[in-house]
Structures are given as C-alpha cells and as structure tokens.
Length: 81
Image: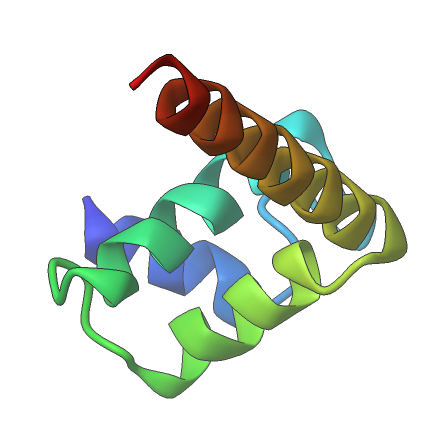
C-alpha cells in the first residue's frame, strides 16, 4: 500500500495530480503521524509530500487552533483536579 502511494506522489505533486485534494490532506497527516511513531519510513518522497501537505497556510492554521484547544483542555482538566 505504501509503495502505491509513493509511486503516486513521486510523479505529480499530489495524489490526484497537481492540485491538492481532501485525499492529500488525509494521507499527508497520516504519513506525518506515521513517521512520528516510526511506522512510516522517512523516505525522501514521503517527507517532501508531508511537507507539501502539512506546511500549507491552512494546515498550519488548523494545527495552531488544535494546539490552542489542547491547551485549553489541559487547563480545564488541571483545574478540575
């Protein structure tokens, strides 16, 4: 399965061609998570693909919002004790 994805992202920029799609958002995030836990190899095509999908302005904004919500959740759990 991973080889199929790598084949697809080596030619065009994204899974369905030169334009990012929801599939890229899903797989980019999944590969990023997988590399974090050493479940996906950090090969050059995968690293470049993850960077293309996770370093977009919208992705960075969502990551920032997620971090803020996680911090808020942590503060609420700490306050409850």
